[in-house]
Length: 204
Image 1 (cartoon, helix red, strand yellow):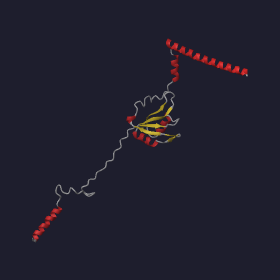
Image 2 (cartoon, helix red, strand yellow; image 1 turned 90 degrees about the vertical axis):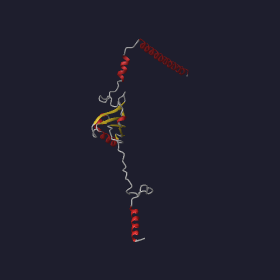
Image 3 (cartoon, one colour; image 1 turned 135 degrees about the horizontal axis):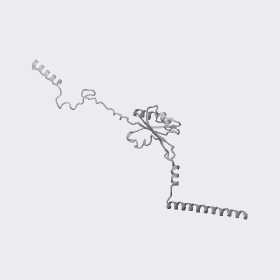
Image 4 (tube, one colour; image 1 turned 60 degrees about the vertical axis):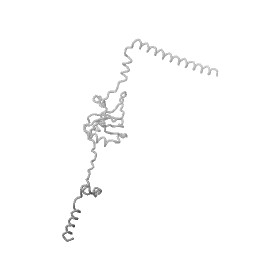
């Protein structure tokens, strides 16, 4: 083999080494980490849902901290749209929880975050956002006219003074006679017991 043949063979070997791999070749080899064959995947962080809640629940409300006091205290955070304290329908007393609706959802979130577990008049407030889908449809019913307690005395007076039918009057008389009979029996039993005690004292 001459010099020309040797050079020709060397060129062929170098060409094979530097040539790109054929289709199907090199599949058993994985690219090095950080090499051109590795694709960098961007991990997408889950987006937080947009806050649209404007109503805040407030629990453990102390005695004396009512509508006017609550409105004066919470308006420092932002504009208040509506406010309501749950009250007993018969007595009108506070049930120590209520709801406040703010104009801005951001303000409502700040109040829920900052005022939760806040110590107020020896009471720890429980404050939380109320999601729009969880708001009761009758939550704000009658809130504009304020709380009007039920006048049970007037209702009972009206029921007592209304005109009675013959059957109702008869039933009322029977009840009076029955109660009077029981009262007379108790009086007689007390008289017998008293007379028995007096006789024993005389014998002694």
